[in-house]
Image (cartoon, rainbow, N blue to C red; front, side, top):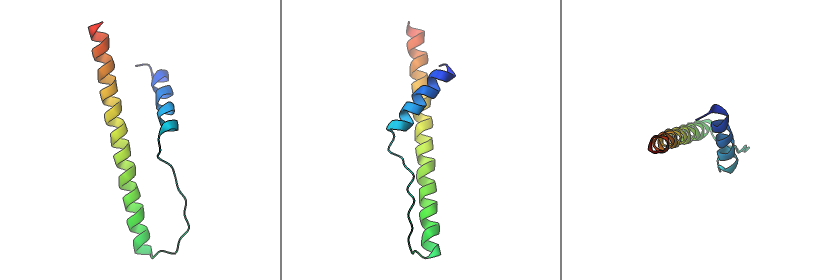
Amino acid sequence: MIDKEYNKILKKYHKLSDRHILVVETDMPYSVVLKVVALSDKIRKAGNELVSLIRKNYEQLLRTKRYRK
């Protein structure tokens, strides 16, 4: 896949993705803030892993289709 095509598809995916940044002010104890930050980091990493798996499977699908042609 050409890098330009891939970047276009990735930008399109990011526009449709429902992952957003939310800024909130609250009066939470510091220990709870640390737990929230750690959880959000895990969610971010899981999302990145999911995107990489989708990318890998998509690239494999394209290679298979090219081979069959």
